[in-house]
Structure formats: structure tokens, C-alpha cells
Length: 113
Length: 113
DNA sequence: CGCGCTGTATTATGTCACTGATGCACCTTG
DNA sequence: CAAGGTGCATCAGTGACATAATACAGCGCG
Image (cartoon, rainbow over all chains, first blue to last red; front, side):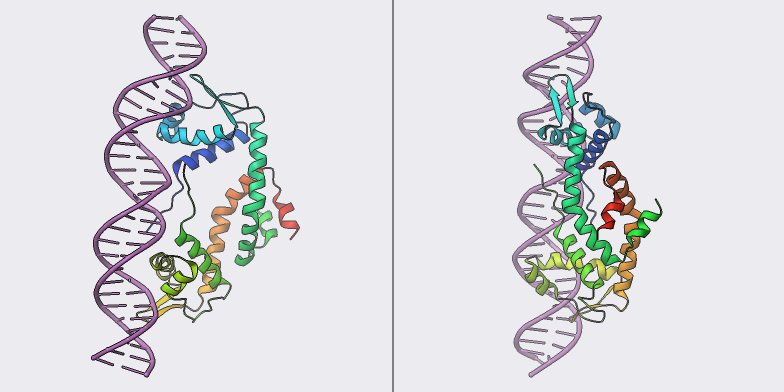
């Protein structure tokens, strides 16, 4: 038996990405510190740092040494665009064929909003 | 750096499930042997066996020792129903909120077939 | 300066999913 | 019975993931 549970640092990454897009962490503001966010989520600071690192290398977050990590202006829209494109190009086609195979009616999906 | 690529046995599982639903592996017929399918897919026989096992425990496939694994009558519909339900109950809600966040209109996607 | 807060590098440890190589038990066929 | 096919159990190796314990470097504030 197995689990295949999504790695913690990826869950955190998605969670943070959603928060940035939704403006929970507004542009120009500071992200929660590694230690603070780790304590809040019950995770290890290193794991949180790993999640943060991806945003940093993508230029969505700027690090001020000794201060914290700040959301770069335009990060929300940039994130939304890239994820949107990725979704449309990769995930949606697969979903489409899969829904067809499962006999799922698109109209039915939109019904119960 | 990491990978987090979908495990091989899960890819195989999905592939086989799709084949059963679509009738590629018709009910009453025998699935490809573990070794044959492994050679065809360039995988390890044990990995294939792991993929097969789930169908076996779900009663979708019947094992005849020393002979092979046969698709149980009604397996296709049973599979379609369970996957369909799982999709509607679990995946679609998440997709829904995610698409909303990315500014994607579900109706528009479903429209142009 | 001194204290406390930031992120980060280092090293080490432990766990677990995944994959693989080998051998065995079972069945069919000749 | 002998041969070749089946699934399956056993044991082992690998790497990702997570955690831990420190330590260090930079910044702000009193």
C-alpha cells in the first residue's frame, strides 16, 4: 500500500501562490517570516524556506537581508498569467478527454454553481 | 532541487483504467501479462504488478493463478461510475475555485468543444 | 553597541515511496 | 513429466522528503 501524498513544501507553495494572487499578501508587503509561517502551519522552517525559494528564483519575491521577503509589484498578475497559461496548455486538454471518457456533461457541471 | 514526478505505477494504473473503460481491454478478456506489459511500456514487471493490484483488490479484475488476470463483467461501467463520482465530488470543486482565481471562465472553456 | 528579528548555509538523521533483481508456486499444453 | 507461461513473495537499493540542531550574516531599533 502507498500514499503518494503531496509533499508539504508543494502544498505550502500552492497556498502561498493563491494568497499572493488573491491579495492576501499584497504587493509591496512582507511575507510571513520563515519561522512564523512554520510555527503557524506546524511545519519545519526549512520546509517553508524551500517553498519560499521558488518564488524568489522566479522573481516574484524580493529578499531584503535581515529584514524579510517582500512581494514584488506585479507579482500577482504575473503569477496568475503563468498559472493560467500552464493550466490551459497542459491540464485542460487532459481534463477534457478524461471528462469525455467518464461521460460527464459540461452543462451539468455549470448547473450546481 | 527536486522532481515530484507522478509515480510510474500510477501512470500505468490510469492508462489501464482508461483502456478498460474504453473497451480496449474488453470484459471477459485477459489483461496483458505483467511481463509483456512491462516490456511494452519499458517498465519493471513489479511496477506493473503494483498497478494491476489495485484493480484486483477493487474486484474489477479476477486472477486465475498461473493463467492471467481477466476483466470482470461490468468492470468498465463500475470503473466509470466510481471515477465519475470521485471527480465530481473531489476534483471539480477544487478546480472550480482554482479556475476562478486564475480568471478562467468554465463556461467559455466548455463551450468551444 | 546590544538585542532581536530577518533569511540562509551546514550537517546529520530518519522515514518512506518507488523501483528493481531473484526466486517460487501455480496453471496449461504437449 | 517437462517446458514455458502466469502472478506473487522476498529482499534490497535509491532517492526524495522532512526534521533537527547549530551557526552565520545582515538589518532595525532602543
